[in-house]
Image (cartoon, rainbow, N blue to C red; front, side, top):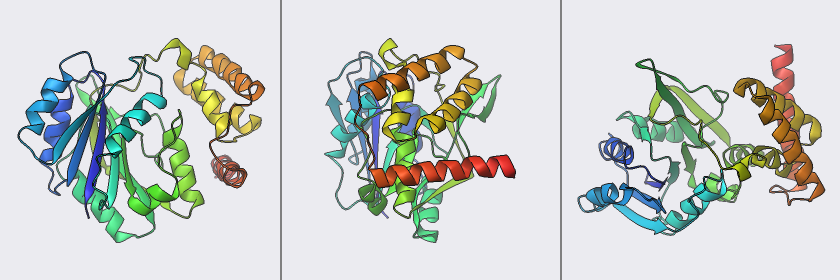
Length: 283
């Protein structure tokens, strides 16, 4: 199986070298690695160049975009800049962050997952962050979800879901759409990836309503949105997140923001989410 990897990178001079070191030393060889330097203002490109000059399967391209960290749009725009350079004979396409250290057998085990079950459309491990000199699980999501930092897609699944949506929530709707098309999602708790920067990123002020807008665009409906927002607000321990989310949802509703899924896909998503809620309540 041929693996192509796309890595959007913005001001990652401290980390990207470690990420690339962990990728070039994998026990399963990576066919192609594409790094998208997304308007970095530090020494990121210099680090990238030190790898592209030594390794023919590593290439880079520059993307000129806003320096504002708008969740969703910035990273997906960079991803598709890199996608233009993908070898069309790929079997697995990966979107990775530029601040990860992968165990050396990571992709060997990912490939085994895909080969073992032809119904698996996406696979991934888990991110760990350093706290008090220990690497602990970054508990932001359920264990059946693959973090946006380390997505791996089977080619047919990637095509079925229409690729990645240019919006916050892309790394949730991709899995929901994969399930809608009959694919399964596989995670492996033994695949522990070091995440060098916490996901607690300081997004720009314009982004504070984006999470709620994403729920709206996925056709959650108000009640599901409300439950999901309460859950996230409690996890973040932030009343302001809850308040901003409610404002964001109402803004999206009033402005009739376009949906990113069809009516049929939205019906499936709501049904799937309600089943998950009922399962947690009664088991």
